[in-house]
Length: 291
Length: 310
Image (cartoon, rainbow over all chains, first blue to last red; front, side, top):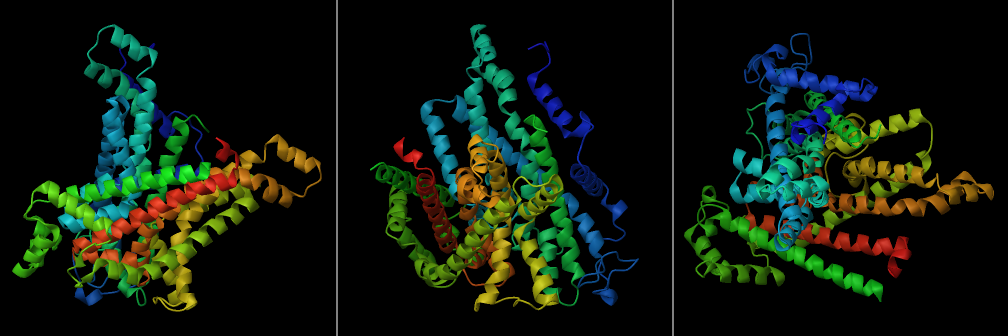
């Protein structure tokens, strides 16, 4: 470890950033396009008013189902609301909820993985069986089960989104922790008499966490798609909110007379998920050293 | 003999996983704040009557200590008694039996179509030009990432409302199953064909392939008779996971296409907060998942006989 005082955690974050196209100039066209689109999404999430000409909730009964025009890029919906503005204002909640639930998933996964990798055998077995059980229920069904029990709402939605997909990071962190607990530098730290908790936080965690952190963008892509799906089924944000899935659930009733209301947001959401996933895959590829 | 032992072991662990699932559901019910009887009846907003509450208390033994409640819960489910759906006033098992056929047809056709299409696609496209691979990778990424409800809506828009090739919504007739099948199988094709192609490309580099080619075998024969079986093992793991997830995707696809089935029933039951029905369908999905895993384990041995000797 030649870095001296450089914390391993800091270094792995540096490595992550380097992997995201900063360090190596060579990036493929697809990745570049995805990067541009994600940057656009980030800008739209931070300054929606700059990209959206109208208030997403302002109705205009005289101009319902207007076709796309210079004034309304994507036309207007059944209440005369500007469809493009609703789409843009939907970026922030989707990204925020996606990021929050992806972080919950990864955090729970890391915690379970560390306990399973470092804890006593009984605890480790218990946790891995729990992971088996969670994996036997598909994420959508698990989410619906939680929503049925606790009712729809932000709290149960976050739990429902967060628990699904915990298995993968838990397994990866456990595998990594099992290797690292016997690594020479951990043995050295133990010989020096460092307390166990400190060894875990300073030496094991930063090294075991990398495979879980690297899948964060892919998880984010999944969650965005998952949130839109749950909202489409009617378990997300309530109707007037400019949420993507909720809006599509209503607008697809008018698919015959206003097909643009369905088609364009559908493509936009798909592009979002694909771009985030493309960046995520590139990150995983580079972190594994493949080109 | 070995196979019998593997099967027995896998059945045992499968039952254990299901028991764990039931236990987790029991914990989740009891963790829900408020009266458990009211939780099972859909929460206070559902305004359950006093008679209903009394009935649920009796059925689930809610006046008894927790460990007895748990025993009763597991016992009832182990005997196939999933309780009554309070929104439809019919036993849950009855409802599931009624809807299972439609979903089984849909998921089975999606699984067969998805796996077959991936096999053909991978066999045809392994080790071709770089530009073709780039196009395919993009297409596969799109198929794997696009949310099912969006794929369904776009297919409906294109083929039902613009071209009028397929009916927009119905459960009857063979034409009605085509669009839902494609929607369900696209994520499978997106992931599986990629895995298969990568495996095939690796296998096609092996010395025994060169030998086969040197013996004068045609390219098609090399791919089909020598390379395919070797590429199947990792693909099998992936397809097991993907096919097991089909029941979950059916929730979305059946809603988009207005089809009958377990998925639609699940979505409606969740909206009505019909807890016994939701638990019932979730357990069916978990059992299907466990069965799928066992089937995959047996298929491993069928594909690679060396596994049996170990």
